[in-house]
View 1 (cartoon, rainbow, N blue to C red):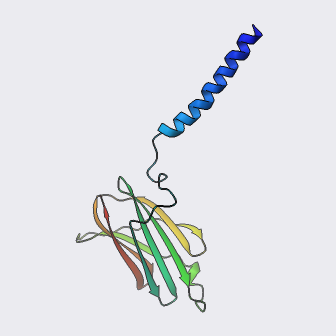
View 2: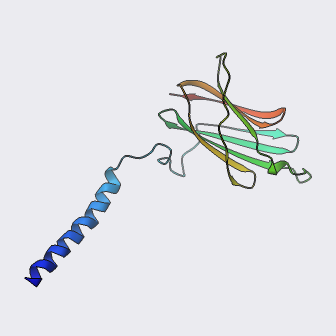
Length: 142
């Protein structure tokens, strides 16, 4: 009797172990999480501003989901510019409607990220900067 119970528990353990690996291979992935670290951005730009340089990368993840990554590298003599959060605005190209501003998450010194879902497919433009100085990047959302 004890041998049968031990065999049953051992069989259930092996089944659970194999099931974890099978579930890992077939589970549906969230498009925001499915991007690997080695993927290249869909669109990017780097713009020299008066207080430093701003780098903007857009990753189109599918189903109108995008990720925006911003990096600001201040000049050596810039006073406090890296502490300010940049202004961000998304708008459709050739459309006469207001854009929108996504909430930014600070991920490090001079670095921000935003994950968002755009309301419609088409050609978009992102403006990122401080005050009157900004970088623009255009990208397509299928």
